[in-house]
Image (tube, rainbow, N blue to C red):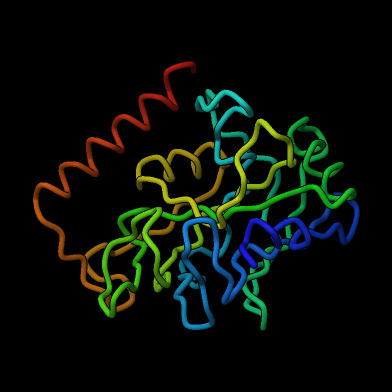
Length: 220
């Protein structure tokens, strides 16, 4: 059973505009043939308050970035349970996108996908730990849980894949927009995982980050 088949039941309305979200289910293949498990390092001591976004900051049905990523609520708690990482979310009643998620959640039609930072995430594949690559099968070994995207299941929106990696400057911009303090991360050693990146890879990531920030700021 794939994550796309199980994600909808992973969001439950548990209070007044309050949701319990199974953000990272353990031992379930997602649409990229990747899995989280009990040994995955989510860096919860560092990312204690993930940003709560609508649809990864992408406009429904258009594939274009929102002028500003829409922050639709706040994380009340993040806990590791037997079935995965749960995030308790309080939605913002004043935001229309949050209302769409709340209405969908009560009908069992809300979906979720976690947001991380591309150059900090790690994938175990073929017995080797590598930098995270979307669409490459493997076990996700390191996944800093920096954000959580929620949205209503409609045909024009993404299907949840349970993971979505962003460049570091883009994630910092999202935290700033949400009024959250971005953690001070030592990128030379992420929980014992040394970042051994070739110069060309570093330059490529920097360029990707610049382009993302330009798109995020273009309509401001």
